[in-house]
Amino acid sequence: MGNFGKAMRDRINTLKNKGADMPKILAESQELATLYAIDKATEMTPPNNDTALRGTGAITGQAKAHWASDSISRPEVTGDEYKTILANNMHYISYLNDGHRMDMHFVPGLMINPYNGLLEKVDPEMGGIMVGTKTKYVKGIYMKQAAINVYKDMMLEQLNSEIRGLFE
Image (cartoon, rainbow, N blue to C red; front, side, top):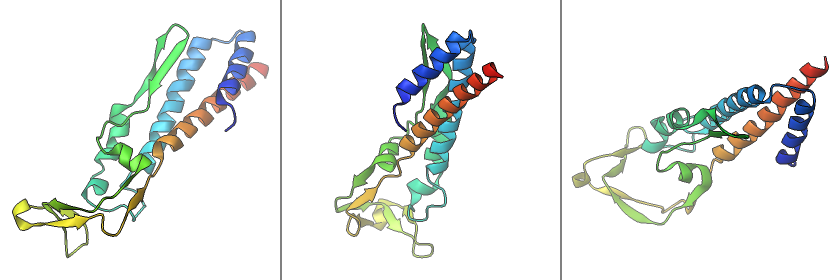
């Protein structure tokens, strides 16, 4: 991606020098870029076409839905600072994003359904399973980083579009 900060400053200076309505341009561009970032993070969060991630936590869609509800796409403006937030407050989202180690341990009340092969919660009296026996590390999906890259691309694209409009 190169130096995003320098690229932004260059575009902002060009727009300022042409007398553009910077507060309006920055707010609209940032809101749109944040919405695209939220869409990217949502798209990459299970459940999706990745069949490798299975189990109750990965099939409910709860983590996917939280990108839209926990993020703030409308910029909060303080002086010259415009702030939006890409967020997902599910307690396990960092494990999905970054990956995690699997230590072997017993989990009561968790069983593999013999009919569909999915993990399911059951009454702990029914038993449980040992987890972490086959997989020592679960690779992360890195949806946050992909979303940030989409945000950066969209911001530059929006500002480039504004610049082109001023020169036409």
